[in-house]
Length: 314
Image 1 (tube, rainbow, N blue to C red):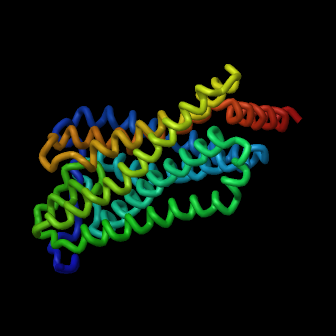
Image 2: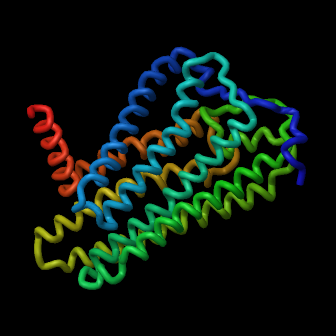
């Protein structure tokens, strides 16, 4: 396998939506607002859960970790994307492209496993409420969190190192908004067939397997909810799970379309839009989904707001 130091390319050009220059200016403003709202929304969730002792339980600590992932994911992608949209010729160094791809895969992989862990937590809480404290102990929670992050690191290390072990002899134009694996791989001047088989298999294991386990968990949860004698209990359980299901569907659905698509199945512009769906929408909507659909989060937010107002009046 050839090493990347044999490559003649020292930097890449990110094309973005260069075919639509007027559209880029409009998109820049929209994406900037999305980025700021994403950072603010997830930062509020992290802060609220940190400050409210009542929320120091697995369900909300999982959510806090998810918000950390979303903030990090956005910070890796969005600043560079805004540069691409605001300049005629946006370049990124070879090392910079490597780093961006690495962290995209790290946080994306971590989120895949974290969403699976959150589904298991809800399954244990709803289907086995009496034994839930024994099932979801602090040690089990810590192991699930560590497994999610370590798995993300392993996925990123293997895949990024392999992609950049291929020689890149030109052209150096990435027809995308950031350094994502499929468009970068198209520039490699070597046979990438073996890697593509690995990537496809890896995507099925990392994306599809957790997604199927989540679906199975929620099928069990649905049956458990329908057996509840209390209407209030059913509504509360549905409300708790609806937010997670919305997030899961959005994230896994768009990620599947990006990484499990045929190599030439879609146009470059369509591929960009599909990537934007999970890189922009998921981090933006998760805080809204969890805070607006969860009564405990709404109460904690109100408590924090009232405390802030009181401190200002004193």
